[in-house]
Length: 107
Image (cartoon, rainbow, N blue to C red):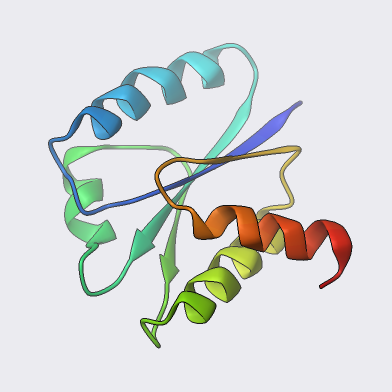
């Protein structure tokens, strides 16, 4: 089974991105993908409130307790390591690319 991890914001509960994931995730799951949605959670992002409106089977909150860019990269890095997906899709979370780069090159 192929696995995919989406790294997405949870700040916009009723936005277009949330609606896009609502349609995309079940379709991928029905096609045999193992899908995890990683939601950034922190000062401007509330994964708990987001998940009350958008029900996904597998989710993880990505918490950046420091609020710094470095803290965000490290939080995403840890989630990617934990899930160990075949494919990572960063959706409006640019720190995803830095985290993936560190994983790929051992930085």
